[in-house]
Image 1 (cartoon, rainbow, N blue to C red):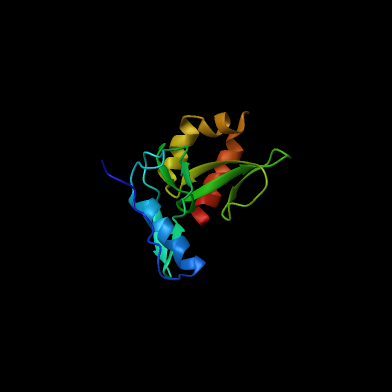
Image 2: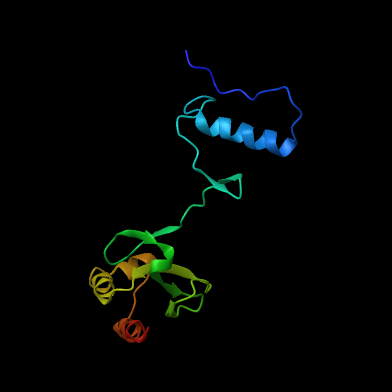
Length: 136
């Protein structure tokens, strides 16, 4: 039977070194302590730091999951206006599309923006989106 790694006691240590050693011991033992998954940690400046998650969003055109920064957000605000959001911070309900014009055409053809925004979208709005999309 395999035992969990222990922290040596003997010489005087600072609390910081004991804590980092305990964290390393927890990370090294897979499955011990009630978890079946190893914890994703990285070393940064001699400290164990939990790895950051990259936010993923699905493209409404092709349906692929991509990094949020790779996609353009289409926003419908409270007034019902639909526009492109390059910053990703405009208020309103958002849907994401790749920076590829083909994905915008696929989303238009399959009416995915209408499903995402729960309402009918006129053709003039799609034409304006395509013009804005070509500018950026």
